Amino acid sequence: MYAREQATQVTVFVYSAPEEPRKHTARYWDDAALVVVDRLPTDPLVPPTRAPTRRPTSTPAPTATATLTPPPTATSTLTPIPPSPTTPPFSTICLQAFDDLNGNTRWDTQAEPALAGVTFSLSSTRGISEIVYTSGGFTEPHCLANFPAGDYHLSIEPPAGYEATTARQWQLALSAGSCVEVDFGSRRIEAQALPASRQESATVEPIAWVALAVVVGVIVVFLRRRRRAF
Image (cartoon, rainbow, N blue to C red; front, side, top):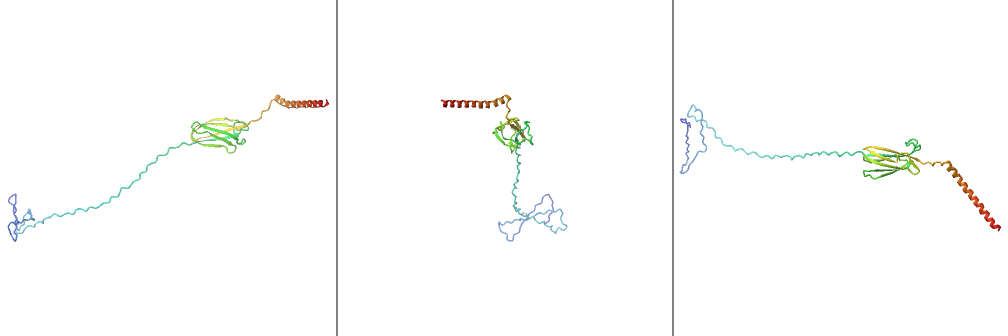
């Protein structure tokens, strides 16, 4: 149908014509539309094209897609190892005993041999027990190692029949990583010559004893013979 507006409002009445009308049977239009066009067609008998009614289309709900989340990768953390404290290097003491033949307090390595029987005693105030070493005469120099830095006392005793030509008491101040060499010399004690007066008395004394023995023997023989005569 067509209608031409003559006011600001348009009222549309719809009705139905059922094939079997009955009482209390009401019918309503559920699908009815009022289309307003800007311009009427030229032929008023040609009905306008009715716009299709748009029915709501149900949009399917999106399907939930399971997303696998990879587990977090364990990252190894390298913990730096602190450097170990540096240990100071130890010190060494080398001992040498020699026969100081010429008595010059120096070791003449080409002419003076090593000497056996020399006793070295090393002690310290750092709580280190006393170390005693006796020279063998063929294994020298003998080195004592692994001593911490500090002050040490060395006492030396020559063998029997020898006298020291170098110091017998040593104070050693060891620094870290140092090496101290100790050369100890001693020589044989020679018999001293007696004075001339003592030499003469030493010669006369045996002769006097022999003469006295002879005199005593003569007297004994004389007395025995005299007894026999009577």
